Each structure stands twice: as structure tokens, then as C-alpha cells.
Image (cartoon, rainbow, N blue to C red):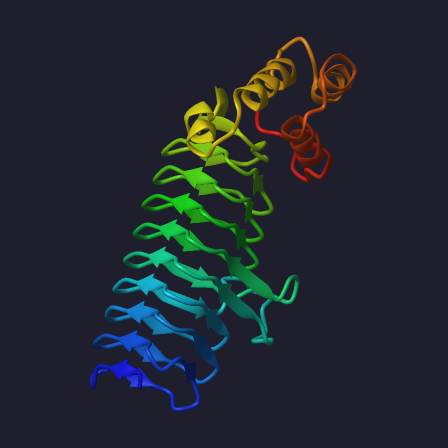
Length: 257
């Protein structure tokens, strides 16, 4: 049976697993699903459209599935989908999607530190870390293992590639390629995320191939088109290098430099 503090207001229509724990002064609306092992500590608000997976820990003051901060939104049916094993810290806000995608998505095993905001239609992959005060505008896409430092703002429709790391207090207005390090305002390329790659088991051969590719990509003698041509002609297209090229090919906002 759900462990529900008597001060909380939980709709009888909400679909909650039997071992969900709800602390004091929480609010859960009708159209909410929360799976096994998830804990709401206190003063957590879960609005209609939230689909929350297993073993998530949600800290005080978090607000999930509030309507998007989009003036075009007319209360259409949309959702927030949160996976398993996430930690959502104090005062995090995760907005419902708009009709553009219908789902705001958080993957598995992510850490969203205090005061993080995930806007409508964002997609946050697996194993991501967003430090205190990170602000994601609408339609941002973070691939797996992205790490973003505190007080960083990310422009709408921006993509950040897998295993990339963005330093604190940065301003991200263009796409960040996978495996890279960026920081600052204006943001600047700082090399590969070598420590992160080694921690996650990338081989020396993969790291060396990425170093060669990025040395061409961020050589000031080449624009992006020229750099891609040279990478394809001069280097072995290992899986990680091809991953970078695919990311660039699908970029909508252009690359951060």
C-alpha cells in the first residue's frame, strides 16, 4: 500500500505503485503514473501528464508536469516522461511538452541538482548530470552522459552530444559536439572530455582518433565544411569519429566554436 503522509493531497485516480512513498505536503493530480520504489520527500507537486518510472528520488519543492511556459499552449494533452533511478533535487521544475513533440523526456540514472529547469519538449538522455541552476530552454536535446556545470543557460533547439561536458556559467547557443569540452560566455572549445571518456572505458585508440578529428575540426584554417572534407579524406572513420560527423550532419543551429 502507498505510504502517504496524511498532509499530502493525492488523487484517488492517480496510478501509483504499491510501494511509492509520499512525504508531507505533496500534491498529486488525477492523470499521474508513478512506478515502484519512487520516493517524494515533501512539498512535491506532480501535475497531470506525469509518467514517472522506478526508484526515483524527488526532493522538496520539485514541480513536475506544470504546463509549458509557451503562450501558444492551449492545454492540449501532453506529457512528461521520466525514466528510472533519477535523483531530482530541490526546486527542480520539469515542464510538460507542447503539441510539437507531445513529450518532455528524462532518461535513466540522471542527476538534476537544485533549481534546474527543464523546459517543454526537452529530451535529456541517460546518465546525465545537470548541476545547480542549469536552465534548459524548450526543445533542447541532451544525449547520454552529458554533464553541464552550474548556472549554465542553454538556448532553445540546441543539442549537446553524448559524453560532452560544459563548464559552469556558460552560455550555450549552438550545438556542442559529442566527446568535447566547452565553457565560457561566449562559449569556447576546450578540448576533448578525456577524463570522462577514460572513466567510461573508451580505448586509447578511440581517444586518439577523436583527438585527430577534433584537431582538424577546430583548426582555424578550416571552416566546418572544409574540416569535414579533410577528416573524411585523411582519417580512418572509426565509430566515434563517424558519430561526430553524424552529429554535425544533423545539426540545426550550427556548431559552437
